[in-house]
Image (cartoon, rainbow, N blue to C red; front, side):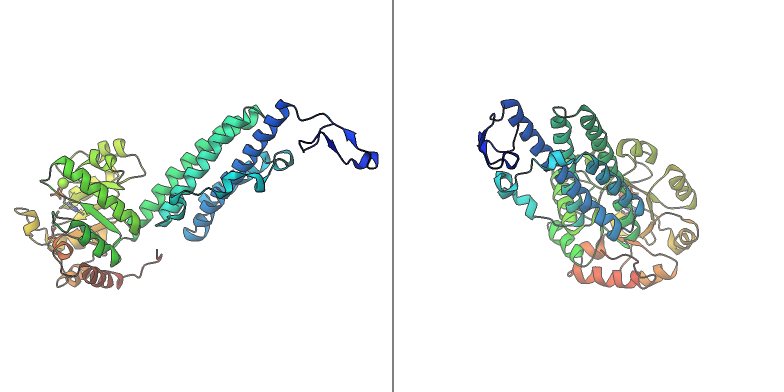
Length: 374
Ligand SMILES: Cc1ncc(COP(=O)(O)OP(=O)(O)O)c(N)n1
Ligand SMILES: Cc1ncsc1CCOP(=O)(O)O
Ligand SMILES: [Mg+2]
C-alpha cells in the first residue's frame, strides 16, 4: 500500500485505527512525486500566463480571434492537468513561492506585460515538455506543439499591436541630431507622441547603434513605436518596430523579406506613381511630401498641398504629410486632407516639445477623435 506521506506507519481507517506498517516510498515513487509537482506547477504557470494575455485580447483589443486562441490553449492544458498531478501539489513546502525577480515587479507598458507573460508561458511549456517525457510521451508531444503555437500567437499578436498603434498614430516625430536627443524625444512622448523615427544621416554606426538602443528603450517605456530611418540592419540590430525607406534605398519587397510581416515598413513618396508602387509592394505607411520646402531636406522640391489632397483621396494605408509643417500651417495641411503629419524641426527645435506635441495632436484629433485610447 502506498500513501502520500514519507512515514512508514500511519492511521488507517480501513483497519479501524490499528497501526499498520507500510513500505517507505521507493526512490522511483519519490521522483515521480517530484515530477508531478513540476508538471502541476508549470501547468498552472502556463495557464495563468495565457489568461493574462487573453484578458488583454478580449478587453483591450476586443479581438475575439486572439482571445479564442488563448482560451483554446488554456483548455488544452487543462485536459493534461489531471487530479493525479494536482494531488502532488505542496504549496507551503515550495521554496519557489518566495522567490521574485526584480523584473517581475517592473511592468512599464502593456507590451512588457505581454512579453513577460509570453516568456513565462513558453518557459513553462518547455519545462512541461521535458518532464512529461518521464510521465506521458503524448503529453510531451502536445506541449511541444503548444509551445510552437504560442510562438505563432506571440508573433501575430505583437505584429497586430504594432499595426494598430501605427493606424492610431497621428503625429510622427523624425529626429535630427541633437545634444538633447533623448530629453527632447521624451518630452514629446510625455505630450502623447506614439511614433518616433531615428534619423541621423551622418553619425557613424557605433553612435547610431548606441542612440537607437536608448531611443528604442525610451519608446518602449512610453508604449510608442520606434522606427529606424534607411537601415534595415540597424532596425534588426536594435529590435526596432520597423524601418523607413526612401526611393533610393532597398526596395520594400527586399526589406519585407528581411523584416517579416510583423514589422512596419514605411516609404517616402513624392507623387502618385510612387504612392501606387508603395501600395503594390506592401508598404505599411507612406510619407507624403515634402509638402513645403524645408532646410531639413535641402534641395528637395516641394510637392505642395495638391499631393496631400491626392493622398487623401487615393491612399488606403496610413500616410503622413511631411516637410515644413509646424503649428502655424498645420491647419492648411489638415484642410488639404491630412489626418497625420510627420515633423522634424517643429519638435526637435521646440523650447517646450511636450506643449507643441499636445498642440499638434489637438489639431489632428479635431478631425476624427481617436477611437481607442491607450
Ligand atoms: C515619415 C518620413 N517621410 C519621409 C522621409 C524621407 O525619407 P528619404 O526620402 O529616404 O530621406 P531621408 O530621410 O533618408 O533623408 C522620412 N525620413 N520619414
Ligand atoms: C526627412 C524629410 N523628408 C521629406 S521632408 C523631410 C524633412 C522634414 O523636416 P521638417 O519637419 O523640419 O521640415
Ligand atoms: Mg532615406
